[in-house]
Image 1 (cartoon, rainbow, N blue to C red):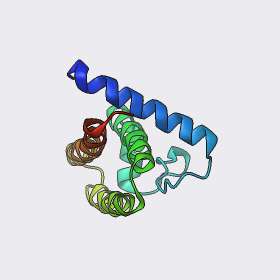
Image 2: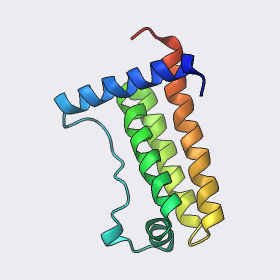
Image 3: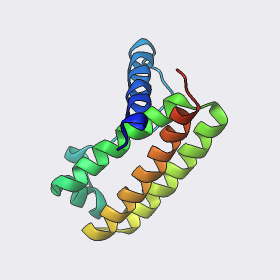
Length: 123
């Protein structure tokens, strides 16, 4: 990643961390998969595949940052897209290739939201 884009992104992550610490009731409606309670084929596959578990953790973190930095209208759009992502993820079942592609797409989408915010700086 370009160093010019990395600095604003790191700053954005830091701001969200501070906001989250000060406001535990932040408007984040996505919880990462609880592998102890995984029941669907997709959840079990994600929990048993290291790279997919890492994708889940990364996506959840980026989702939290993105929803914490945008206005309510855009937050609703991101939440709607997250629900669609979950439906698509579940449709993959135990297909690791499908799950990897779905996560890659969602992570790209969420990174685009953060990049858009960072491009408007300063913070």
